[in-house]
Each structure stands twice: as C-alpha cells, then as structure tokens.
Length: 306
Image (cartoon, rainbow, N blue to C red; front, side, top):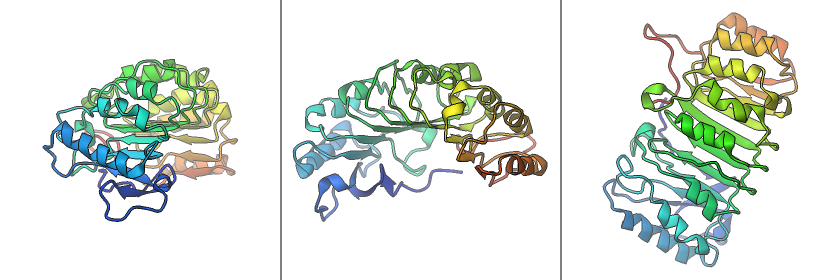
C-alpha cells in the first residue's frame, strides 16, 4: 500500500487550499492546506504561502492547518521556525498536520522531519497534532495539557521518539496513534519501548490506541495483552502490520477485550481458524479482520514501508 491520495477532511473540517480562488464565508470552518508546487522550492516560498494565508484568515489565523510539501522535503526538514515565529498570529490554531503528502510528492520514509517539541511548546492550546514522516524526527518529553490527539505516521518510527511519547505528560490525550514501521526505515522500537505508554500512567485520559503498521506486530500484541491501559480503552488498533497467529493467541489468552467497541486488525497474516475465533470470542466487539495477506518467501510485510 502507498499513500496515493490527500486527506479530504481534517479535524472534522473540509480542506481548502491556501490559494483557492474563493474563500469560505467562515475561514475558521475549514482546514487550510499550505504547500508549494515546486518540489525544489526554497523555505521562503513556503513561508510566503503561509504569510498569504495568515492575511486571508485574519486575526488568530486558521483553526486547522495542513502543511503539505514545503520543497525538497526529501532532504530538508520541515521549517518549524516558520510556525513558531508566527505563533502570536496563530492563536486560533487547534489542529495541525505536518507532512501531508502522497508518495508521488515524497515517499513517507523519505520525508525529513525535525524536533517537533518546539511546536508543542509554542502552541499550548493545540488539540490535534499529526505528523507524517519520521526521518530525523525528534521529540523530547513534554507536558502539554490541551493535546487530545497525537498521530505519528511513518514507515519507521525511531525508538527514541516512542520513548519520548511515553515519558511525556499528556493528561487530556484521548487518541494516540503510532505507525511503528520497519527497522529498515528506522523503526527500531521494541515492545519494551512501549512499556510506559501501555502502563498508561502519563496518559490517564487515553481511550483510543493505535500501534499500527508494525513489523513487530506479534511482539506488540503480546505486550498489549497484559497492558494496564487496555482496560480503559474503547478502541484498539493493531492494523497495517505483520500480525499473525502468535500475536492473536496472545490477545485471546490475555486480559479480556470484550469491553472494546472496536478492534482493528486489518492487513494481517492471521489464519482463517484464528480469525473465526476472534469473532466468536468477541461477539459484542466490532472486529475488523479484513485484508488478509499472504506471507512471501522473504517473510511478512507492513502496509507502508518506503
């Protein structure tokens, strides 16, 4: 699977390009997408596009902002300073997606990122943060009281970033989604790196957890099976990965999952027998076991890698 389409909504809002011919009646009722047409563009072109959007939106700026291609995104990290330096003019910002690109613009594992800690520090009212791409991604443990949703999409998420999420104090985070990816593209996290997240102490409000696109999906499932945080989840998402019978056996013999409203295991390598057991033993749960994959001679694969 590749990411071949742009999202059509973000934070529940329709998306409008920063240079669209017609402006919506209420600039706060849409998510604005800022990107440059030239993949080789310099940082100042992205900054100029953001400046034009800020003038268009008026005081406070947009409520939801999507950063697409900023130019040479395969070799130059997102210009976080452009956002941080304009924080005073972005007081209304509540939702931010950095790196929303298709594979034709830049493969997910080629997208260069940097230290996203500064963004969280500069926007204490931010509620939704999505980041696509993890090459060079950094995060330092942080306290952020407003953040409700954190999504890190990657073909390989560094273990250091995973540990930083677990070490952060995010008291109102209800939705956490990590695309762990594969070791070949920097996804070197192991189940032990997830331990603070699975303990749940720093994420007391968490109800939706996604540990997706994982090469180590069986290992993750075994850790989840005994994780304290699971008891208060409503949704658990282990989709897009290399999950097989070993991981499912761990889930079925671990703590009860009947309290979940949804369990997403789509894109998997589970046998038909265990697929049936899942649906039989979790009759009140919306279990998604679609998109069964066939293991290749060289092994299993995640939905997204390069």
